[in-house]
Amino acid sequence: MRGINRKTGIVLLFIGLILLSIPLYYEWKNGQEVAAMEKALTMVSESQGEPVELDSIEKLTVPKEQLNDVLDLEIPAIDLKQKVLPKTTEENLNVALTQIKQDQTLGEGNFTIAGHRGYRNGRYFSNLPDVPIGADIIVSNGGQKFVYEVKSLKKIKPTNVDILEDDKVNDKITLITCTTDGKKRIAVQGILK
Image 1 (cartoon, helix red, strand yellow):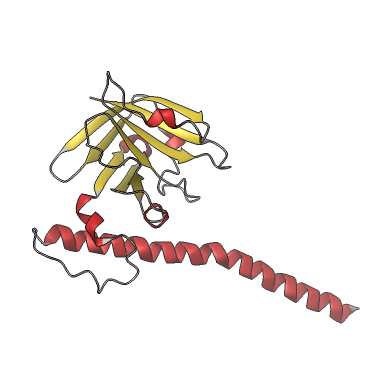
Image 2 (cartoon, rainbow, N blue to C red):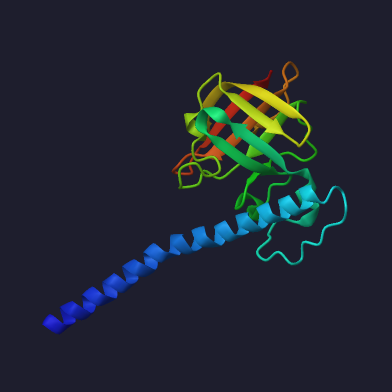
């Protein structure tokens, strides 16, 4: 009986270690993909418009043609600085924030951005629910900087896509992420200053 208990304990310990290592593996893998994207972005920005060979970068999941259109998003009130890729795909959402609508123009209409919540503090939109009303949202595309003032933060149903529509009165920004349980969405909206 004693040997059976010991074997059961060892098996349970082994299973527990495997279960603990799964998120660590995905975190490590995601870290490599983010580092590859950042290396590629550095190479593109330093190329001064010359063609850049990115095939040597391992773990690069972002298509090369999207690297020229990456934006920077900053929300100082929650210490957020993230890259925004131009197209929403599962691969892109795994390494950065993404633009929801195709062919958006900063400072015009309702500029929409999506991002995973992330379980780690400070990652992607993990702290988005903490952004205070009146905070600045800063989006830049290299030379231009657009500053929006947060006007609302609310939980919405995933089917509430009306929030992404353009406003005929104001140019604004909408940031979307999931609640921690994934059943609803957090929507932050700001008006262009």
